[in-house]
Image 1 (tube, rainbow, N blue to C red):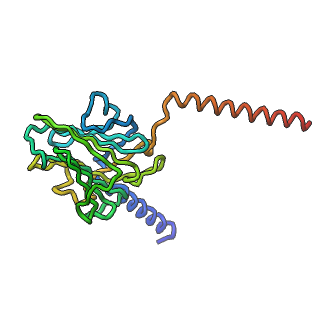
Image 2: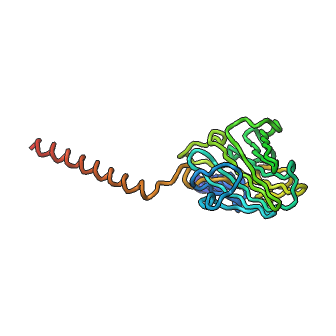
Length: 241
């Protein structure tokens, strides 16, 4: 077997393993935390407030909205549920901060949850339930036909740096007590298998997009600088003659 053939086989194997690593999560389930305006975290999904967010659905008539504003991740749950169980109905976000998957949770895995009665719950795996340690908040509102929850999780809690590419493992849970519903559906009861979770990305690398209003002034400044540099070089060349 020639060296060239061995090298080709090694390259194919490397690319295959690299592909497997990238797709540690189910590639069919991905949420893009698009840039949007910061919502008012009051537990009420007002008209238009989440219209600039990504939208995902969970099987029990739960709609989830996700976006970021360059400093925080925002998630809202709109849950249709007429069977009110204040202390048991819940909405939870599971996050694998280092995107390292695996069949069991690790120290970089967290759960942030709120309940229909407004209670908060945080789990730092594998330590178990801990008091909320700051850097996030959630508020809820409830009626006889359903309830809503709004989350604010700061970048510091996510180990996210604005402008730096990062993918986070994510699973979503909606509890219509005693029934549990998940996204992705493969995230089974108590989703402690991060390899079954989906991906949370930001196509803007966790920073706001440049708007057209900003692009025009930047173009004008760049053009002005180019003219100044050109004239300075032309003046120096003329003096040198």
